[in-house]
Image (cartoon, rainbow, N blue to C red; front, side, top):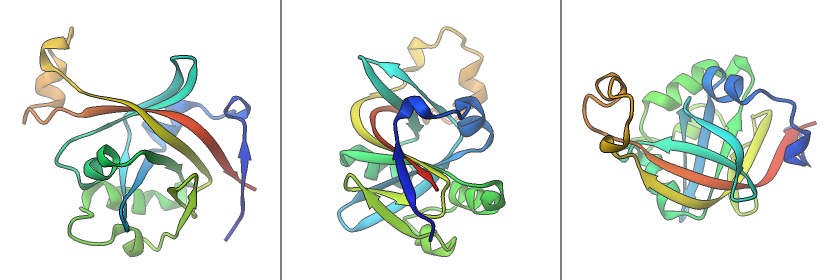
Length: 169
């Protein structure tokens, strides 16, 4: 496997809109000895509370929700386009039913006691700072509700401090 190098988050030249919204990310977390990952295309990177942060959104029925919610850390993993079929699979299959990581042929490494996908090209290691359930009463644009929440399964937003950024050499 290729090696990763830690870089300062300010050195990243990646476009977060492309990374998350178009390329997609794998949110990976651990609870006890169980590691799971799920595909996400919502979230962002930025600065909050004088810290470099990532913010992600997970529906409570997702298996990864429990791992992120109960753990202290999570990672965002970005892979080459050739892994698109696996990203699609990790967005549909449930870690409750199978080991999606093994199914996709992925390997797990750990940094800061946080699992990340070895096949990735970029891993963002985050320590949870905050979590908040989305509140339907707080939406200013009500057209979003039937479009994204017809089942009223509102996401929980997690904000994590970026503690390390790993790029593949």
